[in-house]
Length: 193
Image (tube, rainbow, N blue to C red; front, side):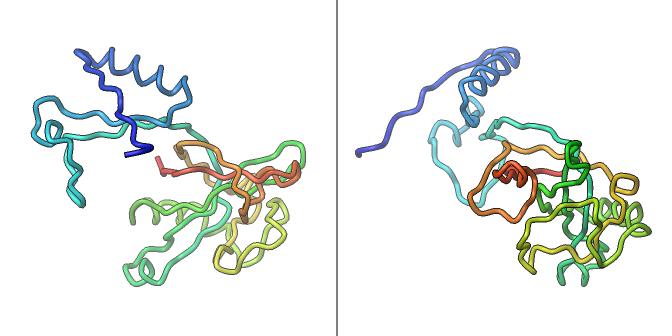
């Protein structure tokens, strides 16, 4: 089998050793690795069972944390039917040089209580028009445009902590973060904290 390379196998006797190995792997630029529970049949057989989740295999990945500001919200028909006020949120960062916010990522809101808390905070400060404090990409696709926009996000925006695997620079992106420098940035696998 050309192109198939066996993986290295490590055994750790403490969480300290595992943590040190994790930091070394990340320092080498690796995305992460899989930890298997010793002695479990799942680990010994080394087979992935599709659709089955348990604690026998855990993937450890690098995470970077960001504090981003809510710039707009979305509401899918499914979440609207379920009674959610918000299903997704458009997040961005403030560019001190341009004195404007730049969009960075559209994220799912993790649950209804978080959706309600977010909506309660920003709804009084939202409108259907774009706020001039926010820079959007020149051609934002209609499907990517928020239903409502936070007005004066510097004062009214809610800060949301997000973790992600990495900052990416996709060739095709509708975000505006970095657009002034000719390279747009987004987040890879963002998670609402």
